[in-house]
Image 1 (cartoon, rainbow, N blue to C red):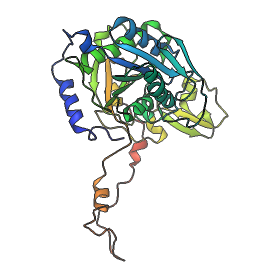
Image 2 (tube, rainbow, N blue to C red; image 1 turned 45 degrees about the vertical axis):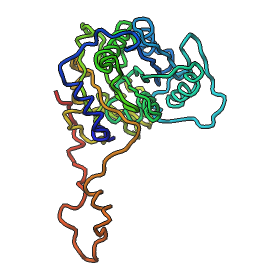
Image 3 (spheres, rainbow, N blue to C red; image 1 turned 60 degrees about the vertical axis):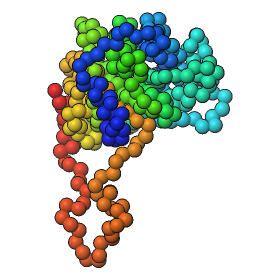
Length: 354
């Protein structure tokens, strides 16, 4: 997915703000800094991380927030939608909390088209998450959390996808810390002079490191502007004839799936065929060896509404109408004209950069 070159003016503005001297939002009036926030996720409306964030934003800030999420777990559903599947179960169990028994993207559209419209609630920002598990690299493609944000971006809303360490959902203290970090992101970065810096259809995907069993204050965590790369700390998906060959199955499921075929995970990510993530600015490399070492870096990567990308030089030349694209019979192609082949080194085990 192309990221930085798709909206150079917006990114330049964001980068300028990001890397200048740290600013703290002070002296803002309530009308200037209070946002209408639509909160959603792909784990279900009752999950601890999302509920902790909802309650914190509702009770500890001036923001107006509504939670609209799937009824149950919808992880890995990506951009799936349910067109003309009628009479989906919907509910409003508490004030400002709604659910739909459907996919994350369908639920976001339900939130925008039904809940917000009927409540006369115009969202300034959509937050998808916090997800129970990191959505870095290749995983962003299949993530219901990221695709929920993307659905809002396509409608022109500013949106952020937030993901956290899965085990942090099991601790109220860690879940509260996740909420505080998200609030810091909003107050210290996304709100400047009382205005949201994200423009129409501009998005971010945020990954928060492991918080459980870590002695730290919320302000110990810093935000780093990164890129969506390829790598993921939890490895990558690979189909196995026998899942006993999945080291992830052995490490995290005690071999429960041994003797069965199916889609599993393997570590490291490029053992599954994912090309090595060598970009030092990628979120994966900014995290470092997060499964074994503690980091206080929260990665923040630009996210857009589509799979749009700039063409390579070879493609530009091939579609240049001023130049012939066919080779004469028997003529030799210029040396180096072929696209580079996949490097054999790309499958070698790789450790994230420190």
